[in-house]
Length: 253
Image (cartoon, rainbow, N blue to C red):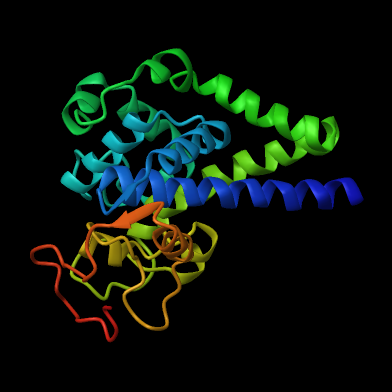
């Protein structure tokens, strides 16, 4: 029982780290340029993303930008409006890989993220990153805890990412006029990504919480980084995208 509880704690901790890397670095930073990072911060985020998810940065960015360009249309890589939320929840990884491995899609939507030498020789090897990440857990906590924690992390991360795309475009509140939704409980377990309606309303905003009662864990990471001058937020004010102004938030600052 002690082994299981320790593995659960570590697995959830690793997923929390992966979620922060995903929302702060991949999503708000690289995909929407809402945040810029110092070189050391960028390097740390990219390494942690690789070790915890195996994601190729330019592929993730391309898939997400295509999602914004064609939200909930047949060209959306993962739309519950087209495929049904249950299908997206179950097959989100398959849908992602299909779009991510489409080189034409990557060339079109991530042309500003050309592969570097480190990408070609290191970061493009997704399986290697995942194996190294799991190996570090095994070395630190032993093979039983390390492998079980890795198993918990992979399933938790994939389920949470799928839920943002599936539940976050089907269930929840729509304060703005777009097809995404806000689910505060989902935001709490995905570092803010569950405030998805807010994000589609203002995709260039580094802060996903638009109202005083909304909690965006990712923002709680971003602010200290800005204080230490390790990152810079591009826009200090909330800037809504065209035709996304259904309701004005009570506290947009």
